[in-house]
Length: 78
Image (cartoon, one colour):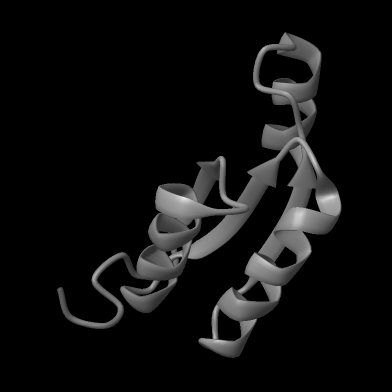
C-alpha cells in the first residue's frame, strides 16, 4: 500500500505490545493512520506509540483489558 492510503484515519490496535499487534500498528502508521496502541500493560505499548510517532503519525498508548467493557469504552473515548 502507498503511504497515506488511510488518510489520517485513527486505528485502534489491541494486543499492540508485541507480535502481530505491534506489526499491525506499525504498518497502519506506514500507510497513513494515526494509532491507538492498546495492551493490558501501558509500559508495553509506550514503545510502540513512540515507534508510530517516529513514522510521523500521532499515537496514543492505552492500558486496557479488552475483556472489561468499561475499559474498552474508556480506550475508545481516549
